Image 1: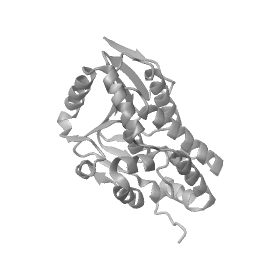
Image 2 (image 1 turned 120 degrees about the horizontal axis):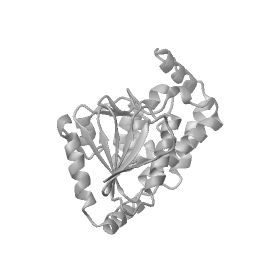
Image 3 (image 1 turned 30 degrees about the vertical axis):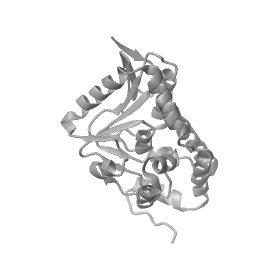
Image 4 (image 1 turned 90 degrees about the horizontal axis):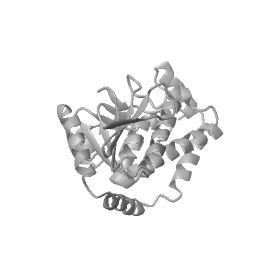
Length: 263
């Protein structure tokens, strides 16, 4: 029997449903599933609703439509000063950590674009299954910003510093095939097979012993220390407000022009 759980209001942009031992968090903010402040708050509400559910073994994070898993933040909501910038990143880190620390196994189901904060959301999931045609990237550097909501630390942990530099320094998206080759995603399947593959994977994991799954996840997390990295990312993001590059990058994005960064 399916159960629908209310999460903090975000104009219907986030839903949470549970069927048997599998929960599904779905973002519906077409066409690009932008992670507005309201959407992020609703995602946090969904995570809070799941953290104490012993009857749930697997959580699937997905998005409506085939165009984008999510392209990240709404640029119009960026704070205007350093203090606001640090607060923004701290909240986003807290949200993604709440998803990463869920006791259940969390699967990201990715179609289309997973960029910026959308890619960071995907990285907070344990297993990432994507359809051919998906693209992944961290374009923040081209706006004068950084993927500081845990993107830097998780990229280094997941794919190593060499590949992390490639993605962060260039800001350019990569294909699903490239993402699979470097270990950014777990599995790459045909578009028509994505739903069935994730359902089969979730059902298989949900059939396994709860205690063993949770302890295995806890042990893996203990082997990837992150002490101090969150603070460094937040402070680095805040420091960007002291230069004109961030405001120029954001303005250029909104005005659909090439940014004129300081040389």
